[in-house]
Length: 275
Length: 90
Image (tube, rainbow over all chains, first blue to last red; front, side):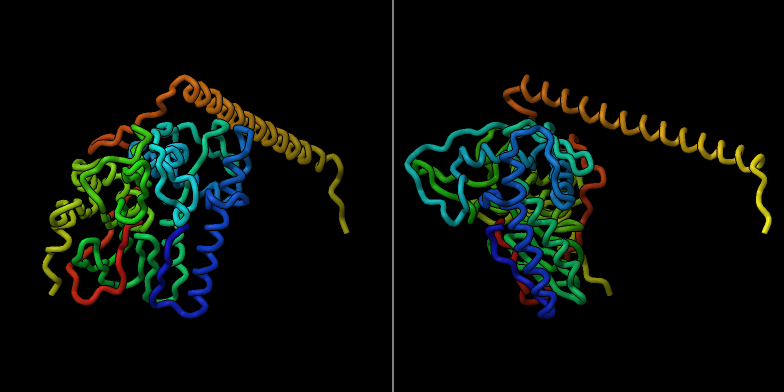
């Protein structure tokens, strides 16, 4: 998944089990492994493809995320990512002279799952990485027998209360559920001297222009937090209200200046401790 | 050991056979409906995909999106000590 996985509070056996699940998900869902199930599905020259149960469930989660965000978090933006220059494993990306292009806008509504049958127009490729990462962190925490946590590429989920450092300084205590950060601080690259990043605006098919460099969201699960953080980032200054309307706490870090928090975050973090 | 007379068991078997036949027909109808719905969706989406080069435009705003049941709040509190880990950018 192109990220470091950190595990706390696990036994040696649990660490091994968590390692195995992340490795298995990477083998199955990497778009840069030619033999991954995702790559095989994306190459399939038929509109209907039979997929594994896990794959189908991830597609269903991705479609639910797209629906819940009004299409902002869209699993069909592979062409736009490639047009922006993200066409190989992130560690292999180097600055290039050619300009980034706009890719095709999102088409998530053209994707359907029926049991284990996936239907999509031939050539419409899927990128499930975000959903897979969040869901795998949630599942990995489920493997812990006691208090502990799993963190991977900005996504955190844990059992028990724990203080978590936030982008730009400061920290917060997570008492329940997951915490996720989406942004452009790390996963970005240069094309013709201009920074590109992986958070594609499905309306334009280009990396989103946002006043934020990092958006952190707390939700009941890591997957929900990750999806909400991406949507809030893409919504720019409307992201704060969007999160409040859904009862989610969010923290927004601009390029310069102090972080901004929404009402839900402010209420949670300034709430008096129980006696 | 006594046996049921044939005349009594035959109507019972007939009723079972009839029930099985009705269940089979219902199952066939259900499968056919699902297949028709699935291929109907394919046809509709194919038309939509080919007719709109601009794709499906996101509609997210504060009020527009079908997020019923997807999001639930987590739990946050003021920090009380040294962080155990961090939430880096993804």
